[in-house]
Length: 183
Image (cartoon, rainbow, N blue to C red; front, side):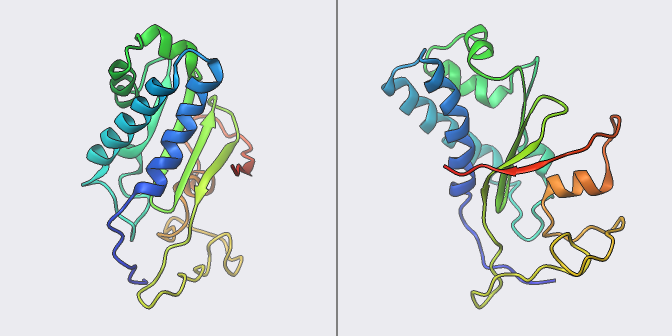
């Protein structure tokens, strides 16, 4: 196991997640620039506070469920809190945001899926850095490593979404496509 450099910030990951959600509000045109700026700052502050004791760069999947932003016919309470700060009702948020959205905010990666059977798309990705500044090499058995099959012991640097695809999920099996989204 590689020792990772202390990573005192989760700012790039939170910024990517907040920017993604804010685009929905901006595209629909129901909020002005000042409201959008307030929403962005509020949600960044809320997420940073929420995640501060649940951020594990050396084990990115640890706490992933806690950090997951989920809208599934029920509004995520953190998004709702930021929406309230700019005067949006929950009904307005439901109109502005996808009705089924999963947004994973993990160390080194932010990904999303719209719909239960949608493709998982990567919004932000960076590489862990080992002490000494070198990137952490792909582990044998990881999808980018030697190609050996991955068993129940999943490498700690495989993304949580890759783990979902490798180990399966509780609902019926689906084929997942990975897409990378760049800004």
